[in-house]
Amino acid sequence: MDEPLTQFLKRKPIRGWIGMNPGAAVFNAFGVPGRPHTVVVDQHGKIAAITEARNITPAVLNDLLAGKQINLPVRQGVMSDLAWDRAANTDQTEPLLQVIIKTSNAQTGGYLPQPGRFTADGTQLLPLVAWAYDMPTYRVISLLPASAQQYKLSVIAPPGREELLRPLTQQALEAAFGLKTRRETLELDVFVLSVAEGKANTLQPSQAEKELAMFARGRLRGQRQPLEKLAQLLGLTMNRTVLDETGLKEKYDWDLPYDRANTDVLFSALREQLGLELRKAKKPMEVLIVEKAEPTRRNQ
Image (tube, rainbow, N blue to C red; front, side, top):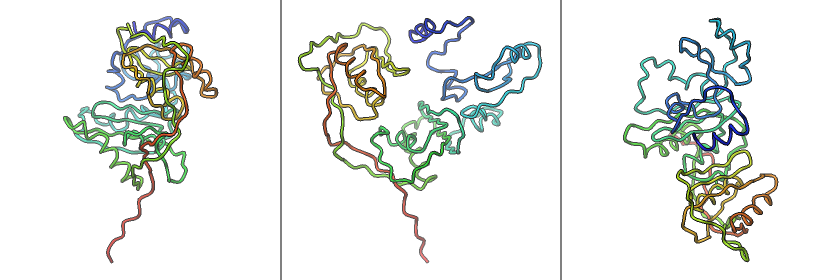
């Protein structure tokens, strides 16, 4: 059984069957980038509802088992229109190329990059731009008017042309929102990850069989990962560029607590558990500047 699932079930026991989905094949097949995701299937194998988990009550399940039709609020988000227009495509023919941008009222947001496909829902514009240009959000400088509008986005690159996914997304965002971008190098406040002075290096090369890199619910975990990956995860949790200058090249394991409101928790864990430290520095870093494009003037 998957180790994160094993740990979750220890904290939250579940009585019933649990289906494993290695590689997210089922989620990918049905275009589901966000989790958790609740789909109710009746005894005939047909979808009875796509809704929020809080709407599933014993009474609803009893009605479903009795063959009655259930009427639950449709989840706003990724699957509320069944991966948008795919439900209407009865032959399930995969598009050779697709770019769809819509506004969204999803209650939860996120995005899912896959080989040749990028899907997002409930996501504001700047995170989409950051992904399209392969730039961390904390190194995107926006000169656009402030907006909390959320969007749905689906981009599919032609088969065998997966490398076009980001350029296609860039073109779509530029065309839809009238954007222009430029890259500049600026002096930024960053953190540098290094071996702690006066602290013994306690890191040992990983003996784990599987690779893992994630942060969620106040824990930052890694298995068989280079410290460059740890620096990337630290950057995401702290919303700041973190550079690996440890000089350590093996792959390691870590399990660290973090609290966005109190960075001392993470700083202390790095030092005590791994013998590493973060120090502030200024470094020249590439940033992406996003602004409105000048309207094209037509010749009179």
